[in-house]
Image (cartoon, rainbow, N blue to C red; front, side, top):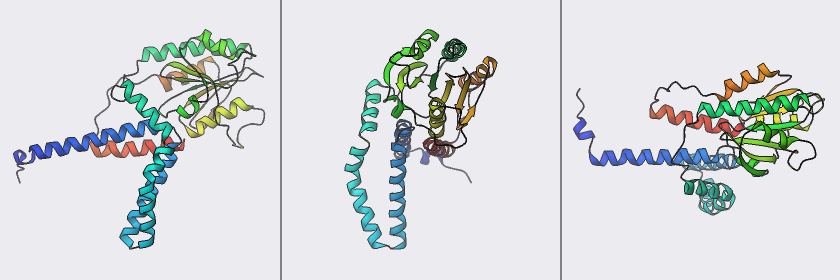
Amino acid sequence: MNLDWSSFLTWHNIVNLLDILVVWFVFYELIMLLRGTKAVQLLRGIIVIVLVKIIAVYVGFGTVSWLMDQVINWGVIAMIIIFQPEIRRGLEHLGRGSVFVRNRQVNEAEKQMIAALDKAIQYMSKRRIGALMTIQMDTGLEDYIETGIELDAKITGELLINIFIPNTPLHDGAVIIRNNKVAVAAAYLPLSDSNLIPKELGTRHRAAVGISEVTDALTIVISEETGEVSITKNNELLRNMDQNDYLKFLNNELIKDQEPEQPKNPLSWLVDLFIQFFRGGNR
């Protein structure tokens, strides 16, 4: 059976295809803006409401369907109020053009960041200066960045050391690193309630584990009592790491593979996007 491609590739079909691609792109950018924020949980609630509406119509539950209609109708106003921070942030990104232009991360910048971290870690560990440094990975950390004092500074070992020197204004809280820059200092991270954390570990370690429970961030902790270096990621606490250990870990996690990825078909890409989005919200 021969397909008549000339009849398929009509202007109407091309416009429909472009229409779908634009919707996919907008949907993808929306997900990227919401990932790592509290809005993820609210978005899940909206999806549940829509599913309940569909099921109610299919089964024939008139009252439930009517209630869902009211929730959906009034939900537009509620969403504007609830998602106000995310809407503002999205418009700011749009105004800067960062939604449409994504610069590829260069490994050279990552290597410079690792060198700066190594210098700071060695200095503070030997002198038992407590420190908490979180590196944003795929999941956004906007909710936590907003709690800190904005720096937006180039990463250097000297800057990190000065931030955590005791009795200075910024030494309490966490440094959050985003896009190879020190975004903020003195930020608040969520504390873990896990009973698996050893009793001898303090607030810094609980905060490091806490952020690893809700995001995929990589966090470095230096104990002020012992100078021990620990790293948390994906709800895992790696303790008592020497210089070789943490450098190997940082290089494995932060240095990007330069090999080009094989293109995926659109359906596979959409499925992966859903999986990454909801996994990102659970971290």
